[in-house]
Length: 477
Image (cartoon, rainbow, N blue to C red; front, side, top):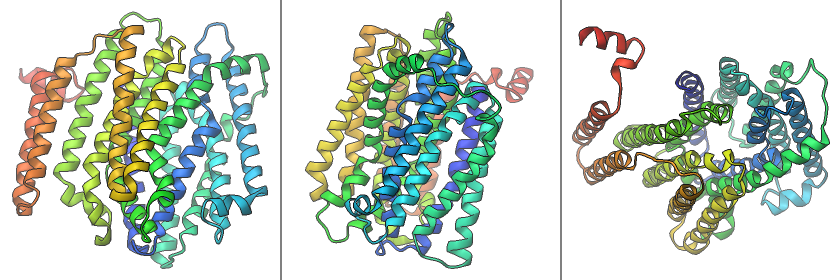
């Protein structure tokens, strides 16, 4: 798992880092007042939700059914491809057919191309999720990572050509470039959906759908926890500077997305292993230890981002956006809770009781929506950030306590508490001294991060077992 996580993680982190280049590029050429980045933030929030709807839980369902002894993995794969592909094609056709009313409802009546281009893009993306899942299932991590990085590199290159070299400022080109890159990926993945007989097993599909529909509900609630604030903001914020404020929130939230990278890399490697070894002895211990180390290293990332925020803020090139930097620690805290909730989610997936996930995510989503509707009109995007903490916090806590009843695990709560308390204390110190001279605050923050690293090494990091470093460690010892 560590090897696969390293490959997925490297591609995810490098990919997201390269994608970060779009943030300074967009914010440099699209001022906060123009609302251009607000449009990007709003549109991609819709894209994230639609992607969940079009895949309707079939990624996780594919992993679950392809590892069942009484099912043919090729039939499972083909059935998954056909079902997701058909739904995605239908969605794209309906949006294009009714483009005028759809674009007007979304607030883009003057720019319907924004809507149909992104609808076509997300439809292709949804279909490609299954070949990518197949690569993960087949342990083809290198091919998976290479294609993901290729997509991002080409996207960045084309964005630089238009926005920097040609000095363009039409936000629509960001969407056109995305469509081109997605189509390119479809061509590159052709070997993953050709060369075999496509077969739709309707009986199998009905069984898969009975497993996947609670995951769909879970996914809808989960993605709403991440994107509902950005979709609802234009409708519930009362100021005339709506797109400007949304752009500020979206740009500064990007800095906090390192936590999403870590969670995604962990998920890509962890999910196939969990389902493949569901009956293995020692799985309980793996779940327990995976939770602890996930929390340890996400808290380390949290400390590093907060500690060096005065440097990381230059990712957002235009100082007009920096007023929103105060949301970064809050959004990162919400991302950590989301990651913990993901770790907790395996108990109901393993016992095939995915309906519990729908309940937990639904409750969390309801809390988030309530916070947004009640507080956004008065507090703006700060309420959006705190809504994420509230939503994920509730989902995380409820999943833990119910899970201990149906699938009890002995999580190392004492160790987790030690690291959590240490991180909270260190972050509090960082925030208290943020008004000090930059050299002083950076020095103190670095010392605090090193102290946290020392705590990890002293308590839990087996240096002697690490490759290369471990060999030298054992030799010196």
